[in-house]
Length: 304
Image 1 (cartoon, rainbow, N blue to C red):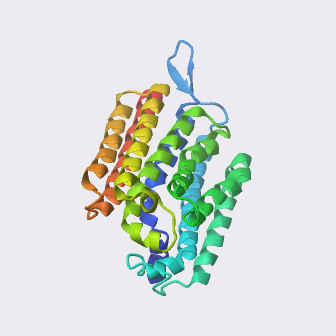
Image 2: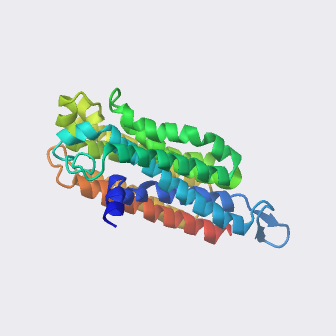
Image 3: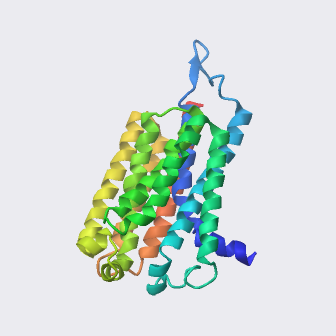
């Protein structure tokens, strides 16, 4: 049990709360956006390809894909950053530098997670299977980006943004604009809050030739960039609501989502980083979960 807890801590399993709700949005969006009305009956019907038992299996597979992709990405990040983590007082207690998990085991865990992710996509459909190496390249590649670009935050956002598109593809096998709009919202949302989180390591990153927006621009300007990215994210969810013809439930979710974005900027200041973790985990966890609940409720009530 102790080993299990160590690996869950290694991959920050609790952070699944960020992308998983958007994967569920993409999944249920694929179901309810592909219904039609029987003329004269005002009754929703689903395409013949939508077998409810198979959809249940696909939902489980989508969730497993999310877990395995995140596990691979986080374990690889910890493996690749182990030398930097050992030198940084904030991260020296992590599992690899503290000796709880060996680098070899962390790498093995990464490889196994990748293989399980690909295996799950094979059972979903061909397009998900063929695109699985691309998804892994993005989520694993992020770990290298702090070595050469301050735009690494956007790559992290891109990795998490695959959640709604991937879940939509799992159901339909096709791309569509609406899940892409949600993915755009995720890119800017995640990039913005990752910049806030990176404020803690500004001096360490500078002294170790690592790249980040705070190390590049300083705390004050980095927060302005984060605010701008969150404005773009807010714009994306608003446009998605208009484009998708959502009802009042969706807009309640939007208000909560934008409210949580504003809140985290109100509690983190360039000269006061005491509440970074509150802004990072609590505010963004509430933003994603509550938003997803209202979006999915809107789909069930108004599109079923």
